[in-house]
Image (cartoon, rainbow, N blue to C red; front, top):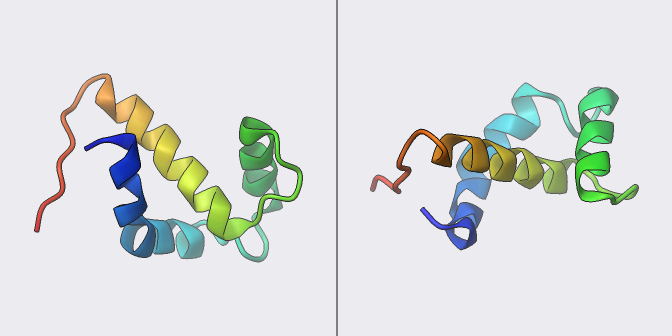
Length: 70
């Protein structure tokens, strides 16, 4: 899976991350960490979920091969 293909995870994994970690409402600490990571003080929850997906992808690529399963 390439970095460009990560967008396909937005509606599934991204929605899970947004809801599970409450990025839209109360998890201000995680949201601030995502803002620092991309140096964007105006980053909101929907954008932060992609920051998390991208960082997870980077770490997993070191030890695993990722692919889209249909």
